[in-house]
Amino acid sequence: MTLTTSPESPAPLRQISHLLSGYIGRLGAVWVEGQIAQLNRRGGICFLTLRDVDADISVSLTCHRRVLDMANPPVTEGARVVVHAKAEFYEPSGSLTLKAAEIRPVGIGELLARLEQRRQLLAAEGLFDLARKRLLPFLPRGVGLVTGQASAAERDVLDNARLRWPGVEFTVRHALMQGQSCAAQVIAAVASLDADDSVDVIVIARGGGSVEDLLPFSDEGLVRAVAATTTCVVSAIGHEPDTPLLDLVADLRASTPTDAAKRVVPAVVDELAGIAAMRQRARLAVHGLVQREAHGLAGIRSRPVLADPLSMVAERDDTVADARDRARRCLGHRLDRAHDELGHHLARVRGLSPRSTMARGYAVAQRADGTVISRVGQVDPDDEVSVRVVDGHLRLRLTSVIPTDEGEPA
Image (cartoon, rainbow, N blue to C red; front, side, top):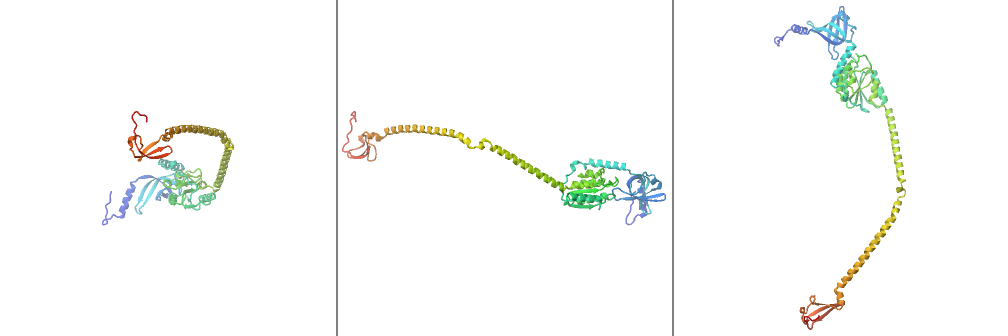
């Protein structure tokens, strides 16, 4: 039913308490999982505080002494249990109480079964895929460490890492490594280190313990927080047989905190030895290369063509001399033929030259303007003419012009 109230007509507290008692009473009996935080026996009634495993929530629990005595193994403080109880609201004090009819301790087998179920669900989401794993840097600028304060795991990681590489820088965040607040504190420490740009690797380290002690490192919230980091995470929880879910989601699983120190930083002694070995190999490789090239050069120099380079030139001397002589003879023959041809042409030119004709007694008569006189009609008496003979010119004045009769020899 809905209760109608207003500032003018408020409901009395007893009515609200009575309504809450009715609402809670309709819930009926339920199965509840939690951890026993406190346990007091008072006569035939036992008073317990039941706390949530993952959240900071607790509630009062009451039961008859025989209900507690029937639990096998016996229930103690810190034990995880499953309780069949009915919720009751005590109206006078306004408090909620669970009245237990049966209490069952959660055994190791059941815990492992629940962890396996959780592992399968997270694996189905791909949080454990190898493709998500990131390679650790060869030499990180800074290493973040999440561990218990003044714990053996902290000493193991710091001492062994600094023995291997003295210059390594650590940023340490302390957190509870077991108990109810463990997962929340580790999540906060991981988030703080992931936001630090100087940290390249985060190591979560804890020594060995029971399955119950290591349960916080299988917490779903912690697993998802580590999967969401941008910085490489190394899980070093417990010993070799211990495998919390944190090992599966981390980028690298170390069997122990000491092993984590060996994984995150290289050993300076090993690196110096490796550098020395590489230098020696490089020296041998260069020496071998020089030796091979020297042998190759010696082999090339020993070849006849390089041992006596002029031998090939000497072999070609006679060929060059013969070719030169043939060239000279051919050129001489062509010059002789050309000389004879030139003589013949010169004789022909001389035979056709006017000078040769004039040497035989002929002359060339020209008027004063240079016109050659070939007929008597071209001149008149008293005209001046120039007569060209073989060795000069004669200037004459005509006294008469006598034409030749036709048919008379010239």
